[in-house]
Length: 274
Image (cartoon, one colour):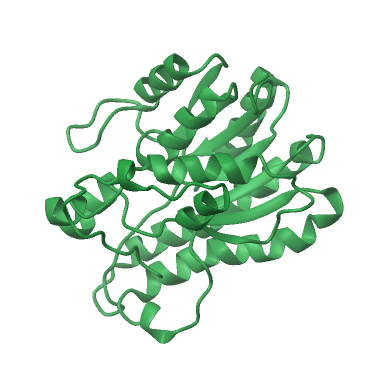
Protein backbone atom coordinates (compact mmCIF):
# COMPACT_ATOMS: atom_id res chain seq x y z
CA UNK A 1 0.00 0.00 0.00
CA UNK A 2 1.34 3.42 -0.92
CA UNK A 3 1.85 6.00 1.85
CA UNK A 4 -1.00 8.28 0.81
CA UNK A 5 -3.48 5.82 -0.62
CA UNK A 6 -7.09 6.82 0.17
CA UNK A 7 -5.87 10.13 1.61
CA UNK A 8 -6.89 13.55 0.32
CA UNK A 9 -4.52 16.50 0.07
CA UNK A 10 -5.81 20.00 -0.70
CA UNK A 11 -3.18 22.26 -2.28
CA UNK A 12 -3.58 25.99 -2.91
CA UNK A 13 -1.61 27.53 -5.76
CA UNK A 14 -1.49 24.14 -7.45
CA UNK A 15 -1.48 25.25 -11.07
CA UNK A 16 2.29 25.40 -11.49
CA UNK A 17 5.62 25.52 -9.68
CA UNK A 18 5.95 24.14 -6.17
CA UNK A 19 2.23 23.53 -5.69
CA UNK A 20 1.95 21.39 -8.82
CA UNK A 21 5.18 19.56 -7.98
CA UNK A 22 3.79 18.61 -4.56
CA UNK A 23 0.59 17.42 -6.22
CA UNK A 24 2.55 15.26 -8.66
CA UNK A 25 4.71 13.78 -5.88
CA UNK A 26 1.81 12.88 -3.61
CA UNK A 27 -0.28 11.57 -6.51
CA UNK A 28 2.49 9.08 -7.24
CA UNK A 29 2.05 7.89 -3.66
CA UNK A 30 -1.65 7.25 -4.22
CA UNK A 31 -3.18 10.43 -2.81
CA UNK A 32 -6.35 12.08 -4.02
CA UNK A 33 -5.41 15.65 -4.91
CA UNK A 34 -7.56 18.78 -4.91
CA UNK A 35 -5.72 21.70 -6.49
CA UNK A 36 -6.82 25.31 -6.22
CA UNK A 37 -5.77 28.00 -8.68
CA UNK A 38 -7.03 31.13 -10.38
CA UNK A 39 -5.85 30.30 -13.92
CA UNK A 40 -8.63 28.56 -15.83
CA UNK A 41 -7.81 29.95 -19.31
CA UNK A 42 -4.38 29.79 -21.00
CA UNK A 43 -2.18 32.81 -20.33
CA UNK A 44 0.88 33.45 -22.52
CA UNK A 45 2.79 34.79 -19.51
CA UNK A 46 2.09 31.81 -17.25
CA UNK A 47 2.51 28.08 -17.65
CA UNK A 48 -0.64 25.98 -17.74
CA UNK A 49 -4.08 26.12 -16.13
CA UNK A 50 -5.64 24.27 -13.22
CA UNK A 51 -7.07 21.83 -15.78
CA UNK A 52 -3.77 21.06 -17.52
CA UNK A 53 -2.13 20.69 -14.10
CA UNK A 54 -4.89 18.29 -13.05
CA UNK A 55 -4.30 16.21 -16.19
CA UNK A 56 -0.59 15.94 -15.39
CA UNK A 57 -1.24 15.01 -11.78
CA UNK A 58 -3.87 12.42 -12.75
CA UNK A 59 -1.43 10.84 -15.21
CA UNK A 60 1.25 10.64 -12.51
CA UNK A 61 -0.78 8.73 -9.94
CA UNK A 62 -3.63 6.33 -9.39
CA UNK A 63 -5.74 8.58 -7.17
CA UNK A 64 -8.31 11.11 -8.27
CA UNK A 65 -7.68 14.79 -9.01
CA UNK A 66 -10.11 17.64 -8.51
CA UNK A 67 -9.24 20.99 -10.16
CA UNK A 68 -10.92 23.91 -8.40
CA UNK A 69 -10.86 27.41 -9.81
CA UNK A 70 -10.83 29.78 -6.87
CA UNK A 71 -9.32 32.82 -5.22
CA UNK A 72 -8.46 32.41 -1.54
CA UNK A 73 -8.91 36.13 -0.94
CA UNK A 74 -12.65 35.46 -0.77
CA UNK A 75 -14.27 33.60 2.12
CA UNK A 76 -17.22 32.30 0.07
CA UNK A 77 -14.83 30.76 -2.47
CA UNK A 78 -12.82 29.11 0.31
CA UNK A 79 -15.98 27.56 1.74
CA UNK A 80 -16.92 26.27 -1.72
CA UNK A 81 -13.41 24.86 -2.27
CA UNK A 82 -13.46 22.94 1.00
CA UNK A 83 -17.05 21.76 0.56
CA UNK A 84 -16.39 20.46 -2.96
CA UNK A 85 -13.24 18.67 -1.81
CA UNK A 86 -15.09 16.88 0.99
CA UNK A 87 -18.08 16.16 -1.24
CA UNK A 88 -15.79 14.58 -3.85
CA UNK A 89 -13.37 12.66 -1.66
CA UNK A 90 -15.14 12.38 1.70
CA UNK A 91 -12.30 13.84 3.75
CA UNK A 92 -9.32 16.17 3.97
CA UNK A 93 -6.15 14.64 5.41
CA UNK A 94 -3.69 17.42 4.65
CA UNK A 95 -3.80 21.07 3.65
CA UNK A 96 -0.84 22.62 1.80
CA UNK A 97 -0.98 26.41 1.90
CA UNK A 98 1.22 27.19 -1.08
CA UNK A 99 -0.63 30.08 -2.76
CA UNK A 100 1.36 33.26 -2.34
CA UNK A 101 1.82 36.73 -3.81
CA UNK A 102 5.20 38.45 -4.00
CA UNK A 103 6.38 42.01 -4.56
CA UNK A 104 9.83 43.11 -3.43
CA UNK A 105 9.30 46.86 -3.66
CA UNK A 106 10.52 49.13 -0.89
CA UNK A 107 8.02 50.75 1.46
CA UNK A 108 8.16 54.06 -0.41
CA UNK A 109 7.64 52.46 -3.81
CA UNK A 110 4.99 49.86 -2.99
CA UNK A 111 1.50 50.45 -4.32
CA UNK A 112 -1.30 49.93 -1.80
CA UNK A 113 -3.03 47.38 -4.03
CA UNK A 114 0.16 45.27 -4.04
CA UNK A 115 0.38 45.49 -0.27
CA UNK A 116 -3.25 44.42 0.05
CA UNK A 117 -2.76 41.54 -2.39
CA UNK A 118 0.12 40.08 -0.37
CA UNK A 119 -1.68 40.46 2.93
CA UNK A 120 -4.95 39.06 1.56
CA UNK A 121 -3.42 36.05 -0.16
CA UNK A 122 -0.49 35.19 2.06
CA UNK A 123 -1.89 35.91 5.52
CA UNK A 124 -5.67 36.19 5.34
CA UNK A 125 -6.10 33.48 2.70
CA UNK A 126 -3.82 31.05 4.55
CA UNK A 127 -5.61 31.74 7.83
CA UNK A 128 -9.08 31.26 6.33
CA UNK A 129 -8.12 28.10 4.40
CA UNK A 130 -6.72 26.60 7.59
CA UNK A 131 -9.79 27.63 9.56
CA UNK A 132 -12.13 26.05 7.02
CA UNK A 133 -10.20 22.77 6.96
CA UNK A 134 -9.78 22.27 10.72
CA UNK A 135 -13.17 20.56 11.30
CA UNK A 136 -12.30 18.00 8.62
CA UNK A 137 -8.69 17.57 9.72
CA UNK A 138 -9.95 16.71 13.22
CA UNK A 139 -11.47 13.57 11.72
CA UNK A 140 -8.34 12.48 9.82
CA UNK A 141 -5.96 9.76 10.96
CA UNK A 142 -2.73 11.71 10.42
CA UNK A 143 -3.76 15.32 9.76
CA UNK A 144 -1.30 17.97 8.60
CA UNK A 145 -1.24 21.65 7.72
CA UNK A 146 1.87 22.65 5.77
CA UNK A 147 2.62 26.28 4.89
CA UNK A 148 5.24 27.24 2.33
CA UNK A 149 6.76 29.96 4.48
CA UNK A 150 10.15 30.78 6.00
CA UNK A 151 11.62 30.38 9.48
CA UNK A 152 10.90 33.37 11.70
CA UNK A 153 13.97 35.54 12.03
CA UNK A 154 13.70 39.09 13.36
CA UNK A 155 17.03 40.22 11.97
CA UNK A 156 16.28 43.65 10.41
CA UNK A 157 18.11 42.71 7.19
CA UNK A 158 15.15 40.55 6.20
CA UNK A 159 12.74 43.46 6.68
CA UNK A 160 14.54 46.49 5.26
CA UNK A 161 14.64 45.60 1.53
CA UNK A 162 10.99 44.44 1.20
CA UNK A 163 9.09 45.12 4.41
CA UNK A 164 5.60 44.36 3.10
CA UNK A 165 6.56 41.01 1.57
CA UNK A 166 8.44 39.96 4.68
CA UNK A 167 5.47 40.86 6.88
CA UNK A 168 3.17 38.75 4.72
CA UNK A 169 5.41 35.67 4.61
CA UNK A 170 6.19 35.91 8.32
CA UNK A 171 2.43 36.18 8.84
CA UNK A 172 2.11 32.73 7.26
CA UNK A 173 4.83 31.47 9.58
CA UNK A 174 3.15 32.98 12.62
CA UNK A 175 0.00 31.06 11.68
CA UNK A 176 2.06 27.88 11.98
CA UNK A 177 3.46 28.99 15.32
CA UNK A 178 -0.05 29.52 16.67
CA UNK A 179 -1.86 26.58 15.05
CA UNK A 180 0.78 24.07 16.13
CA UNK A 181 0.01 24.86 19.77
CA UNK A 182 -3.71 25.47 19.35
CA UNK A 183 -4.31 22.22 17.44
CA UNK A 184 -1.94 20.01 19.41
CA UNK A 185 -4.88 18.70 21.47
CA UNK A 186 -6.46 17.42 18.23
CA UNK A 187 -3.21 15.80 17.01
CA UNK A 188 -3.21 18.08 13.95
CA UNK A 189 0.32 18.93 12.85
CA UNK A 190 1.13 22.43 11.64
CA UNK A 191 4.53 22.93 10.03
CA UNK A 192 6.28 25.29 7.61
CA UNK A 193 8.59 24.35 4.75
CA UNK A 194 11.02 26.61 2.90
CA UNK A 195 13.65 25.98 0.21
CA UNK A 196 17.34 26.32 0.93
CA UNK A 197 17.96 27.72 -2.55
CA UNK A 198 15.93 29.65 -5.07
CA UNK A 199 13.49 27.44 -6.96
CA UNK A 200 12.94 27.68 -10.71
CA UNK A 201 9.39 29.03 -10.68
CA UNK A 202 7.53 31.69 -12.64
CA UNK A 203 8.05 34.13 -9.77
CA UNK A 204 11.82 33.68 -9.88
CA UNK A 205 11.90 34.02 -13.66
CA UNK A 206 9.50 36.94 -14.02
CA UNK A 207 10.00 38.94 -10.83
CA UNK A 208 13.36 38.21 -9.26
CA UNK A 209 16.17 37.54 -11.68
CA UNK A 210 15.25 36.09 -15.06
CA UNK A 211 17.43 33.41 -16.60
CA UNK A 212 20.49 34.39 -14.53
CA UNK A 213 18.76 33.32 -11.31
CA UNK A 214 16.94 30.40 -12.92
CA UNK A 215 20.30 28.87 -13.86
CA UNK A 216 21.35 29.08 -10.18
CA UNK A 217 18.16 27.51 -8.88
CA UNK A 218 16.83 24.05 -8.16
CA UNK A 219 13.69 22.41 -9.51
CA UNK A 220 10.49 22.41 -7.50
CA UNK A 221 10.87 18.65 -7.06
CA UNK A 222 13.22 19.12 -4.10
CA UNK A 223 10.50 20.95 -2.16
CA UNK A 224 7.93 18.35 -3.25
CA UNK A 225 10.12 15.50 -2.02
CA UNK A 226 10.61 17.27 1.31
CA UNK A 227 6.85 17.89 1.61
CA UNK A 228 6.24 14.19 1.01
CA UNK A 229 8.46 13.24 3.95
CA UNK A 230 7.02 15.91 6.25
CA UNK A 231 3.40 14.96 5.53
CA UNK A 232 3.91 11.28 6.26
CA UNK A 233 5.42 11.90 9.70
CA UNK A 234 3.17 11.19 12.70
CA UNK A 235 1.19 14.38 13.28
CA UNK A 236 1.36 14.12 17.06
CA UNK A 237 5.16 13.90 17.00
CA UNK A 238 6.08 16.45 14.35
CA UNK A 239 4.47 19.86 14.71
CA UNK A 240 5.53 23.48 15.08
CA UNK A 241 8.62 23.02 12.91
CA UNK A 242 10.12 25.39 10.35
CA UNK A 243 11.65 22.90 7.97
CA UNK A 244 14.23 23.58 5.24
CA UNK A 245 13.95 21.22 2.26
CA UNK A 246 17.61 20.15 2.31
CA UNK A 247 17.53 19.38 6.02
CA UNK A 248 14.40 17.23 5.67
CA UNK A 249 15.99 15.15 2.92
CA UNK A 250 19.24 14.77 4.85
CA UNK A 251 17.24 13.44 7.80
CA UNK A 252 15.85 10.82 5.41
CA UNK A 253 19.36 9.77 4.40
CA UNK A 254 19.44 11.71 1.12
CA UNK A 255 22.66 13.65 0.56
CA UNK A 256 23.00 13.91 -3.22
CA UNK A 257 21.03 16.94 -4.39
CA UNK A 258 22.65 17.18 -7.82
CA UNK A 259 19.57 15.94 -9.67
CA UNK A 260 17.60 18.98 -8.50
CA UNK A 261 19.94 21.59 -9.99
CA UNK A 262 18.78 23.40 -13.13
CA UNK A 263 22.42 23.84 -14.14
CA UNK A 264 24.86 21.72 -12.11
CA UNK A 265 27.75 23.87 -13.35
CA UNK A 266 26.40 27.02 -11.67
CA UNK A 267 26.72 27.98 -8.01
CA UNK A 268 23.35 27.81 -6.27
CA UNK A 269 21.69 30.93 -4.93
CA UNK A 270 20.32 30.89 -1.39
CA UNK A 271 16.64 31.71 -1.13
CA UNK A 272 15.29 34.76 0.66
CA UNK A 273 15.26 34.64 4.47
CA UNK A 274 18.17 32.18 4.68
